[in-house]
Image (tube, rainbow, N blue to C red):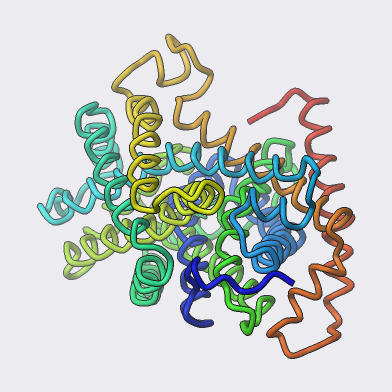
Length: 461
Ligand code: TRP
């Protein structure tokens, strides 16, 4: 067994780890990406398939990643090298590092918008009685302004690097402990408000009514991508976090708690946003601006609405920050572990490169028509959307396929279960066999089938 490496830093304890991992999982994926993807994919059918994938693929792969990380005590590339020496498996880790970098490059743009909206909320920009189209115009003015979009992205990248340069315990854990619970309470309050809006019934019907005719290949692929994206899976993020988890901690308990809270928060976001949209008469398939357009119409109807608006965007920005730090941490851990480079310098260097790669995404929301997608553009979708789907759906799905094959057929479910039993206090549990079956058969077969269908039908998004 590899000795616990004290040099790398560790999470202090169970609560800290669960909150840090939940902090990674809970972010714009829940509040921004889930509602708008559900909206574009017809609502209920998407939501049901998403929930099924969380259980059948998400939780098994989450357990697989955390076991790989804790057993190897390494970054994703080093982890595969330790567990499968002299093979090509470390390439899977490398693919993950690249995917994480690419995801951060568009995620930080949207995270920048949350900072812009925080400032707007503080200035009181969302006047009473604001309509959906006025709100949409305000959103477009913000994201279509090239200087502003780039500056906000830069602000967010600096915040992310500012946390990461201090490492795991001091930076990530301390931060998550306070902020994640505060976010949860605010969401509950807002859900209470949304459920009493006149459009609540229509909104909930859209979100939860299952219509099998909506089940197309792009909807299924989108739901799988969303489940993986939301749980931070498929690129080694949870391998990296698992590598900081002390051996005495109960890994299965942590994994299930994280998946539960992450899914609950996505559903809460839907319960807040769709009633608001239907009340305001806006289109649920409105695309990436959905949350930013819907929310101002809710705040305005609340007593002390401005206070709620400021709190919401502050906490959304923070939820995004606990996710961006987990993305950057994967890349930084790779260079620190494998090359021995100093953490702070790597964090600033990678952060700067990622910011450069984020610029085309920041400019793709109306500022530069060639990057904006659709007619008159060089691209079928905006540069930001394209990255979101290419890396956030396809990259993570392919990565998860390889991780489930690795644990199921190379490293072995028995070795992974040995790691999970450490700190769990049980030697045998009913779910051990179920988990092994899901990782060996269900995950890889489901993913391969989806890829085959996509190639066959030619429907990619
Ligand atoms: N899961 C985060 C969210 O929902 C985003 C995220 C953080 C992520 N780390 C990741 C997504 C790793 C994929 C892989 O907002």
